[in-house]
Amino acid sequence: MEEEMKFIDYIKPPMENGTYYIRATQSVTSPENCRFEDNAQFFIAGHAFRLPQEGIFSTYPADNETGEFQNILPFVVMENRTFPWENSFCPERNGVPVPWVALLVVSEREGAEERELQIGELLEKREEGIYYPKKEKLPEIFAEKKTDTCHVLDLPKELYESIMPSLDDLPYLCHAKCVNLNKTEDRVCAKDGFFSVICGNRFIPSGDGESLKSTIHLVSLLGMEDLSAMPDCKKVRLVSLYHWNVFSQKNSGEDFGMAIKRLKENCSVIHASMDTDLKRQGCSIKKHFTRTGEQTYSLYRPPLIPYANTEEMEAENRHTADGRLIYDRETGIFDVTYAAAWQLGRMLALNHPVTAESILQFRKKQKLERHHSCLRSSVDFRKLDIEHLTVLLAGTNSLKEGGCDEADTDDTNDGRAVASVFRGYR
Image (cartoon, rainbow, N blue to C red; front, side, top):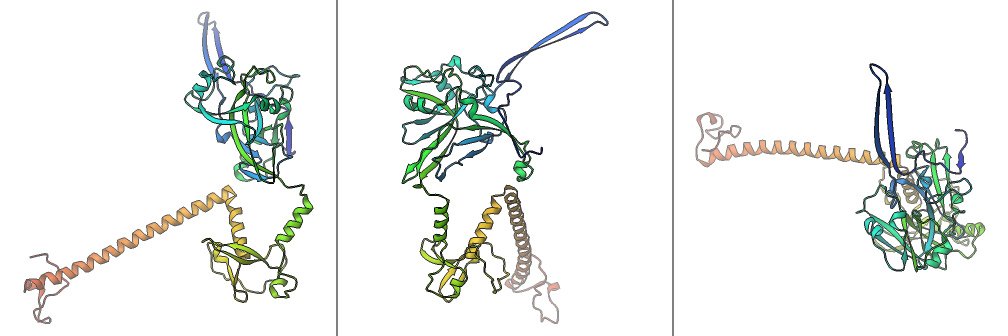
């Protein structure tokens, strides 16, 4: 595929979820005319009340991410290319199938309620003032068991009417895409490149002066034939197939220039009046919180500031970031430049799944080899210890009785026991 990315309006599955019947017939003429026929029933069942984590490829913004998202429409990327069109809850609109899911954004200040319910209780039990489609309108076949739990979202009717997209909008909020994955990491490169994407229709609410928590729900629309004509109720209940949280805060109109200015202030060098080697090297003083909780100050030099280092680094292998701390004897404080670089490299390596797995297997192998070495050393030690104890007991036993065997004496030892022979207890 030459294109880096290709967008597709929709990809309908060959067969939607439901019950199917198949009939096979065969006619033969030899040795006589015969007709054979057989019928079979089978089901195609998808997830209708909850989704497994492996069905989600990625989300934007990421789960629990904090930032300025007031102008962001969230979206979720699904592993299954046909997921939004696997079920049908209403007729096509202008020849285009309507997705059976929607992505809703709800802030913590809007009065929505969330809880876990058993699927059987959700289907059978009805609560006063809360609308949920009748059991007859919901699919008869689904992958979950009635004893499984699902996440439900109860929205005030006014909020539901203001954030729920219309049937005409839903086809524009879902699409499929084909992506060239040749330059991605191994875990992603093995995929076929086809995904489905579901977008939200509402910007993420943002707090003024503080972060505002919002929850993004991928909700099922099965059984809700007309999204705009809700019966008389106080709340509308939706099944949240998947959800994640984000935190958004308005940054009072900060633009790119202001961000660069803040970065400059954060990386400012030592005061201009101090004409020192540290200033010429581009070092700055940063707050440093130690592992034990104390607060101090340390030197730091950003990696993009050119500096010719004439000192030789120690070739000794260090296994932690603390091992790369450099004590500056002139100022009496630590230089954390190489420690920060070590930590950054470690995080980049662990962020690559293939590399992280290789490191984990290497550590397991080293640990196992050390364990076997300790066992061998212990066995050798016990063997020598037993031999020494045997010799010692042989000599002590002979002397304790005040005599010895004839074979244990000779003329050169003046009749004394020879400790190298052990004949057992007497």
